[in-house]
Length: 82
Image (cartoon, rainbow, N blue to C red; front, side, top):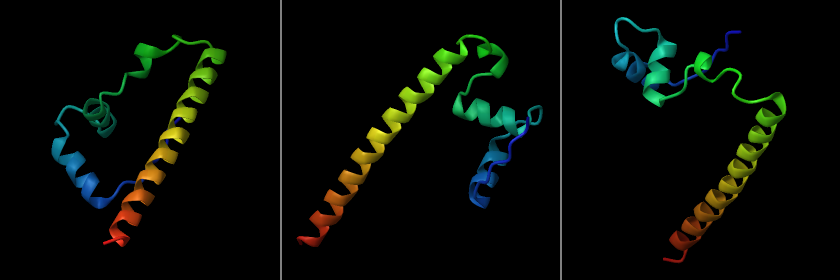
């Protein structure tokens, strides 16, 4: 399955500037983000373990999102006090 992602023109140019002649854009993204090769991780988790891991990641992201929103609000409020 192939997915399409949208990136800014600036990011696309940056990515192409870092792309090696012998690699695809996907390979460049994997190298730059240090993402694993799907073949290397296929079958490591059962469906149930994968779902549990996804839920844990989402809990962390939600908690971090809340903390980021609180920090942003505090910074904005601090700027208004001046």
